[in-house]
Image (cartoon, rainbow, N blue to C red):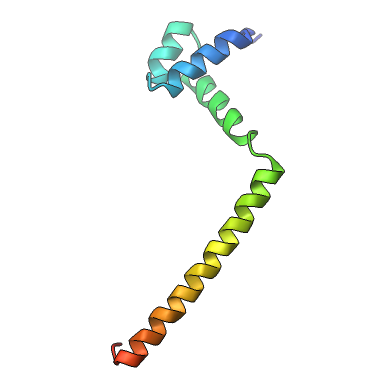
Length: 85
């Protein structure tokens, strides 16, 4: 059976790794595998995005793509006017 790690201990481990301490040394100190630590980090990263944040970022991304498109057309037009290829 896998040992159950208290929530406080898990948070302490993740805080140390996020602060820059090597995952291997933290894993050795607490007697867990490095793979477990990276799994926790991945889980916390993946589940943290809300639909509102996603929709906002998607909208912002679309606006930026439109701006890039307009600027690309302007650059192409200015190259044609000056005769540069």
